[in-house]
Image 1 (tube, rainbow, N blue to C red):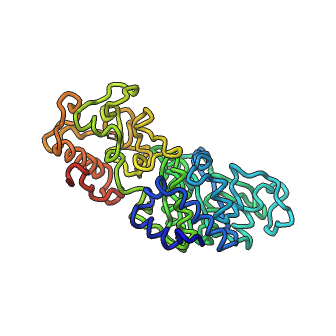
Image 2 (cartoon, rainbow, N blue to C red; image 1 turned 45 degrees about the vertical axis):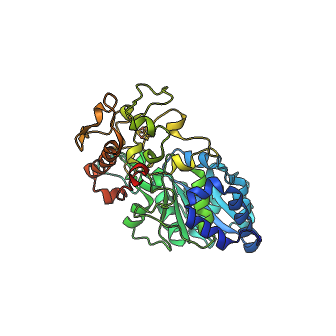
Image 3 (spheres, rainbow, N blue to C red; image 1 turned 135 degrees about the vertical axis):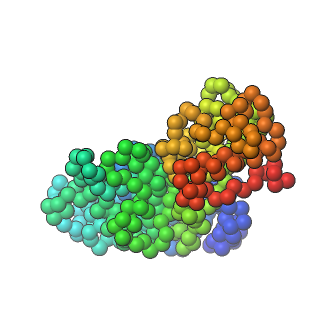
Length: 389
Ligand code: SF4
């Protein structure tokens, strides 16, 4: 173990600074601690990455991880990624086969060995929404069927139940597995829902609380840090939605680079406005909890409201349904909060604390409109820095 920073020191650092700060400021230390896991453990952590209903964007996002990058993390964490369909090749060692797969199912051998055989599963990562059934009136569904086992089709929901019951940790990566996302949006015909809800429906218990890392896509650095945390035997501090608090406590609006423009009522009319606030154009930053504006993306380069578009609310538990949609409309039905008409904020600047209080009241009232705030995982708003001072 390195003399300058032990694992214990690392964990203290995480506790003191918040993991989000560690991501950007202490990537070197993170890499070193990850290397220590490999040096000391030496063993393999068996990871299954299960793809269900999604566009595989979270896997693509993982390829952009930078603190550390994906290859470095997999190698140094001592992870054996036994199955990750989107990025693996089918040239498996056939001598490893133990489960009752058929010849046509060769690409699924490691997956089926883990689900039906004795191959170990330490960490199950789920990308995409499980689809649990066929709602009345829709067509027959064998959703995310990946092959046959003993002559019967194996659905993604079957695999999820078997693997989740076996795994030490279940990590839902992305909006679809965390909250249902687009597959579970209004009009849902496949019974798509979150991993947590789907396992509850099947009465499947997990050994540790399911960890949700929402987002469309999930932030790869947050995912790797979360994996590194559990591989050190420490459970991340989760909120009531199963999200690591380090990444999902503050609101994007709290740290947005366009916040000054919001405070002085400088509203953008178009998305190519380099300075103005996107509230009038439909920004969902005031109702979305996420560390995007703190840690940023792509190695700390930027994030949505900095890069040009607004925040779409892709990490909000209800995305893409209201209040995150309609996408290009301001959050609905909040014309007057604390006597301030937010629809007119572009014409009449909201001064100081009144404006700040107004927008925090907005997100509270919006959360209650769709479902109780507690249900949405929106804790009482922390006072913005201007108010705290
Ligand atoms: Fe930033 Fe959106 Fe808040 Fe405006 S409304 S300050 S663009 S998060």
